[in-house]
Picture 1 (cartoon, each protein chain N blue to C red):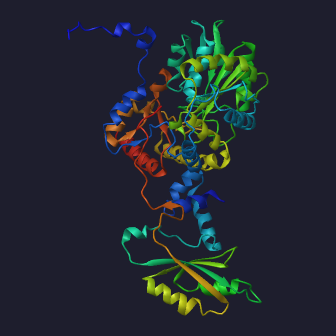
Picture 2 (cartoon, chains in turn blue, orange; picture 1 turned 60 degrees about the vertical axis):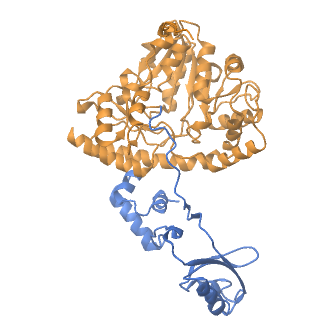
Picture 3 (spheres, each protein chain N blue to C red; picture 1 turned 120 degrees about the vertical axis):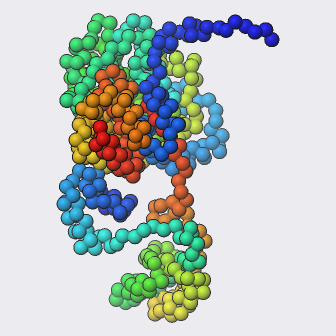
Length: 159
Length: 393
């Protein structure tokens, strides 16, 4: 993977000037590459990674395993794409194994997620069954630990 | 109890030990450790944590009761893994049975090598600026340290001419350290070929400390042991501190001809017995997938190296391009301050710690060592502070 993308993945707010320094490239070249990635849709957005537990929100997240009957044309994609369009669905993946599609669904409370599953997801044509698990605590998200790191262990000056 | 007359202890201390000044790094440490909010570019160890799989398997080893003495040489399983790794990465084959010795860091290995080789009065050639312990370790071994000065105009590389100027019939050992702490210099194959020819013609034993061997940024590392005729006159030193971020495990090793390793083992056996069993188990795990462990860290060091070199250039600070290890060694001579005064003033005014070049030998005057083994956020802030600082000088 292009090192530029690695840097942005680690910190999307890194300034273009600093990225240019790190990669030993002119700033204009960094700008050009980022614009190109955005245009081609390789970079699809920039988001903050939040520790939602710390915000004390009462929202809930459910992980839902969905069994899907593949369609004659389009296989799993047709149904999965339809499911993905619901704004409640934060992430959706096609899986190997005992179920077909894995969803991460957010709602304001347990009832809202339950309503989504029973009223919107389950009745969809092609959805055979669902199994819903509620998340209790987040330890790590997108490669970032939610607990702050321990204090610097190293001596302040060393040979 | 009867009060005794006070005893003069200073005169009882071995004269060599007494006369060696304490490390310049310790002076600075004493000051920095009393201050708050200092950004330290003075730390000669990785800021990364030891890879998790290494730590996890160490805990597992402890659970299983791996808490006993090991063979004096170290676990055979570890020596076998080392033989494979060194063969592949550094290009020299060693017999794990009797040509590899596991030590408590490279520091112990260096001490053993010098004590095993030096008879009082033998001269040891080494290059400065260099790691803080070299001169002292030679003196402790009752050798005569003979320093050769490397220069920025030459990328702090060592040349045969420099060595020829200082070699004498009493020279027995040549010590090398590339990639270099504190300069970040490396030696390419061509550079090393000249040095290898010199060692062969002068019939010297070479001790090569390649602890930063995995950390080169623009070209792959070449080891002098891989050059013709060098393996049989060289003690190769390496360890896990830098590339695997395992400094606290204190695990190093020496590879060399059986006779030399046997001599080193004799001292090790009576003074250290063996390296810690826990650290050795960690090292076995570390060797399981070095590419993935080291790759990510090396990429990050490269980005930081690029960043710090560009930042110095923006500020008009002269700095030879560091090619390995994780140190930059810029010149601060034009600011009209001694290295030590520059470092202290920077510390007091902007709370950025750098190490005066003189900690690494007299020819380090006019330079400071900046370790980029710290987060990019810290580096950015440190460079901003440094810019403000030199603007006021």
